[in-house]
Amino acid sequence: MLGRPFVDLFLSDDVPLVLERLQEALRGASVGFECRLRPRASEPRWVWSSTRPVFEDGVVAELRGVLRDVTDRKHAQQALASLYQNEQRITKRLQEVNLMKTNFMIVTAHEMRTPLTILRATSRRCARLLRRDDTRQARALDTCQQSVDRMIESFDAILEMLRLERG
Image 1: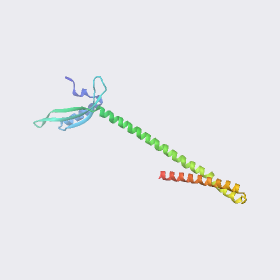
Image 2: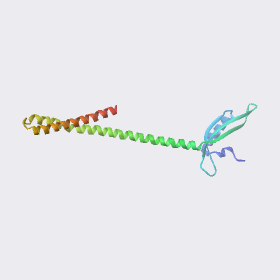
Image 3: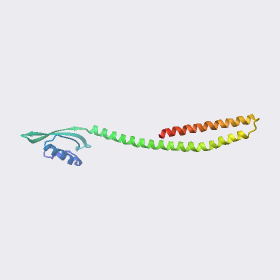
Image 4: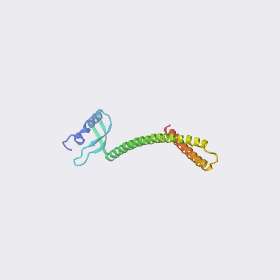
C-alpha cells in the first residue's frame, strides 16, 4: 500500500461512494458504509467500513477506521433475495393455475348440469307416461332419477364450494 492512493483498495464502481463518505468524515462525522475491496488474486470482498474523525484542537487531524469483511453475509442476503423472488414467481404461477382450475371446474359443473337437468325432466315425464303395473320399468326409472339427482347435488356442491373459494 505504500505510495498508493487509499482508493486503489476499492472497486472503481465504489470509489465515488468511498470518497463521499470520507469527505463526510473529514467534515467531522462518523460514517459507516458497505463497499467492495479489490483484492489482487481473488473475487472482490464486501466490507463494512466504519470511519471516524480524530480531532486535534477542534480540527480533523486524521481518520481512523475499521474494515470488517461481510462478504459471506452479503452473499447470503443475495441468495435469500433470489430465493424470495423465485418464491414470488412460483406463488404467482400457482395462483394462476388455481384460477384456471376454478374456472375449469365452474364451466365443467355448469356444462354437466345442463344435460342432467334434461335427463331428470325426461325421466320424470317417462315415469308419468309409464304403465303403473310395470314395476321393473318403474324401478329402473326410479334408479335413473335417483342417480341424476345425486349427480346434480354433487355438481351443486362443487359450484357452492367454488363460489365460497372465490369469495
